[in-house]
Image: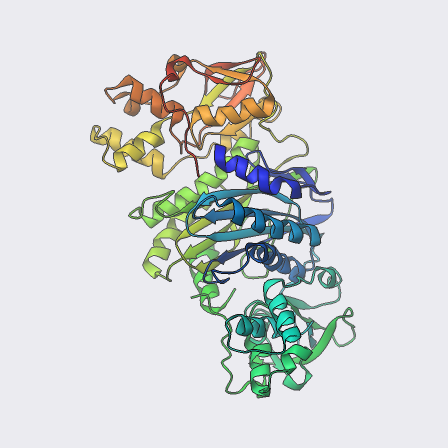
Length: 307
Length: 307
């Protein structure tokens, strides 16, 4: 890291770097983290690009919060406990106002999700943010996508579809009641990674994934990795009051089944196990392949495709 | 990860994912890595932006190789052994030709530096590459920037300045003999992270840094972190034959002292210790602050500033 860059990082981000697993944080060639004995390291990276993953006029504070939340969601989907995070930040110029607000959001999320910021890189270029998260889990206990078996039940956390509806509000495609609109925008800009639910999954869930690209599409990854089929009953989907305030039931279902950005957890459980509180049963695992949802016939099921 | 994106990653990169520390690689919500008992995790991220960190007409194979090499260099500077890497790739479009060549370079580097590729994210946007590397080191043995003490000797690996000279060749600012030109271009496009030297440093070196932004500037970070001054004797700098083929001695020194992109290691050693083979003594640590180099008076000493 060079002079100006280093000062910039130190000024804005070094306050968020302390945590029990942090041996050495920002300011050296690399960070050093402590992984407890008997544990494995879990890591994932997510990139957000301006104009693609967030609107150009989004508040920098929300962008900062969201990019950490989105990455943290992958830790939850593995059942991991949060350890630390790093940030690779590409910016067109060193805009102190933008950086200040952005770092506020980063700090709020790092604090909320117990993810001290231990390192990063800042470069000049089109605004792009990559957040890498680190978690720990007892050896061999990570919850994978591949463990679903016929007969398992399928559950989802929270109320899927809210973020997609929030994006519709943001893009003026729908104008709900103000309270509902505010709630849905919040669900888009400030998703809650389900870390508290996630750490309860090892030993209980047979498979898990976070819903980033749409419920049906993401369940398709569990089905493919597990070699079985998943049937979803749309009438069992837990929809928020805000989402249900949309007059068109088909639109509600489209958001809930195919909308992205929810960062809820989808899990499968053997029939004799009970999920942690906060999950709703929405279907079953069957022999076969693919994801079936009768109500979804005619919906655009592709979810979000990055290319 | 969504459909097309997932297939794209699987097709191009999944072959590089195996290694002794890899519990779970590409294809789930997160990767799972095994950190040996008694060891700590070392991690660093580097971003390369097209048009900023590599020319727009660079061979994609070289870009792929270089971005892994650059990141791996930070592991070497900590004394860590390589464990794994992840790749956050932002591309304007899914260009199969580009991706094929790029992934060739990634694969060559992952193989050469023992860094299995265990995860990543691909997104659409201006071409930007973030590589996160993971290494391991015995607990408490990471070599930091802050341990230099007055009386220590200063060493550098390899022949600094070659990459900056290579960039000059690339930009047609200098046309050396063909053999020299090819060598210098290779040093720019295909730097060698000094991992083999790095793992020999714990317990020997009092401080270390890799030279990414220029020798004087990077030594300035050791001086600042250690609270002392560093004196460099320019006549002791090990210069390559190719660099010395430039007619202007001042230009040779400017590249060696202020050029970036070398990814050599600079280390400090107490006087009673000997460095591993491959290092050349170039100066001493003194009481005081900053970096002094008489030959550098008049040179632009700032190195590379990212902003």
